[in-house]
Amino acid sequence: MGISFWLSRKWMPARAATTITNSKLFIRHIIQRITWPILLLVFAIIGIYVWQLTGHRTVWLQLLAMAARWMILIRLCLAILHGAVPNGRFTETLERTLAATLWVIFVFWLSGMDDNIIKVLKSLKIPLGSTSLNMWTVITAVITVCMVVVGALWLSQMINNQIMQASKLDLNLRFVLSKIVKSLLVTIAVLLALPMVGIDLTVLSVFGGALGVGLGFGLQKIASTYVSGFIILADRSIRLGDRLTINNFTGYVTKITSRFVVLRNANGAEALVPNDNFISSTVVNESYTSKALWTSVDIQVAYNTALPQALAILQQAAAKQERVSTDPPPSSFVVAFADSGINLRVGYWVTDPENGFLALNSAIFLEIWNRFKEAGIDLPFPQREVRILNTDNDPIRADLHSLPNTPSAEPLNEQQKMTVDTQTSHDEPKT
Image (cartoon, rainbow, N blue to C red):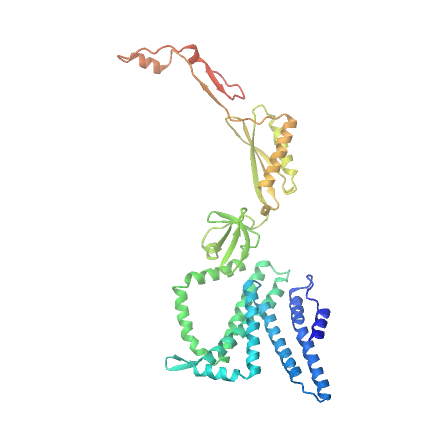
């Protein structure tokens, strides 16, 4: 055992290369897992042959050979399960549980207790109407169906890996083929496994009718979601990395499943949107034909600014950024003559909108600030003027004088006549 373990570690190191494909990685994983038990079996057989020549008993060597054969079977099952079920905490726990169960079964078989356990299980009856099933039949049926389904999942995973590596196919088409292959293989596996355990498929006709009624009523929403998933994958209206807006939520597509689509916004929040929403609702796909997005920033300048120079600075500040597209180049515009200044806008196309806009806009504003300071262009601030005026021709004052028992309006003193100006930046005509 020691020599075979040392040789297996020397010939097949535990760490596999990361540059090989998935299929080669799986084959390497299987070879790595069964190298030690195969060497152990070979050395045990050689030991049995040599030990028999000396006239000694070989009971322990025979037990070692049986344990090596059983270990090969267990590790093959675990390797197939590892390839069929996605990685995660549940996978590791399932593999350990399965390995422990198979070793317990081996001990029962080796000790001869398996016959007694089978007799007890066969004596336990489960009544089903006019017929009955024993626990042994139920357990073997469940194990058989699980083995066939796991084999189908493993085969579908191998085929899916080959499909996903086909770079000539569109990504959405690869997803569609992958899901179709998996569904077909699992369905065929169940249909093959049921007759193997003695279940007549004609019985499923009643179940199929009931399932159709259930889909028409209770499962209508679920069926619609799954069918919509295949539709949006087939028509390629939504792809991974697209920027979508649906139900006032904007985010990037990070995952497409048969039931929902995962959208992730710039804050890290993720929305799981059912697939049927993309069929029945209006979806804004900002990257349907092109990944680049158009955005703009606004800025205000004083009224004494040379507008052509300011517009040129805005274009140059945006074009200086690496993330801004040069075809078409940035454009600047005069938007409005506002209360405190003239509103300008610079628009540009962002080549990688998935990286956000805050840092890019900040860099553009900083560049504009520096260039405006060099050119002597002022950025106005909001202003308001409050004026208290004294005029004898005011119609309101004349009406007050004509009212009976109304004291005459006192003339305003010099303090009331003063004009209060707050934060003025340019002159306006006096009234």
